[in-house]
Length: 286
Image 1 (spheres, rainbow, N blue to C red):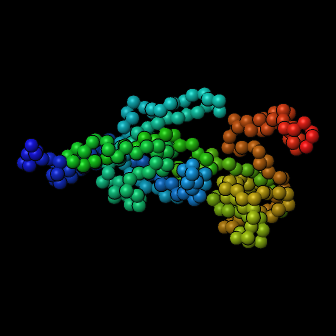
Image 2: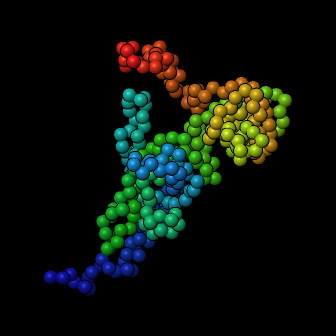
């Protein structure tokens, strides 16, 4: 027996729009403003489904409801064989109509994209998008539920124009400190690129300026290409400043991570493994 057409609320456009309006109003009243950062894939590995040099160059402000009202979920904080790991998870709800008005170019949020939570100024990577939450209320799907996990930064380029977001790269990206000789001229400026050579386009060695200490002439660089060595002339592409490299930078020390133990592991490995051996698996007969 078919349903009663006079009471069929699954195809009532007015009821559906009212329901969506109420959801949007509730999120606006009780939600928070987050930034949605779409991931730009630069060299995606189609076999493993990852891109180690992806970038985040856009940000979209949108209100979301924090569905994890009792705090962060997931595995939490624990000690693994690799040290302390933090795998906090949080679920955000976003109205489908508000998403469609966001003009991201995508019909739904994507796994792998990132949410910036201003409350704690951290990034959360979208692990799963549940598009059937509130299962067909009034015949439509009104929201997306985004299951997100604390983002593990891996030298991605972040350039959204929002200081709180962009400084994540400056804090955690691999960087070096280059000590320059006196006798140069000018002051490097933050976010400009410096290079070695006659022109930036032909330079094989370059980097982006994080900070410049004019007193000690210490230049902190990230987004590196090539190797900075003694007596090279380092030129700023915007400021025009130029100085000569006075000390070869230490490329093994992680400036932004005082707890890194890569040098200790390297030293201990040298005392255990003989890297000068050309054929360690034979008995000398080959």
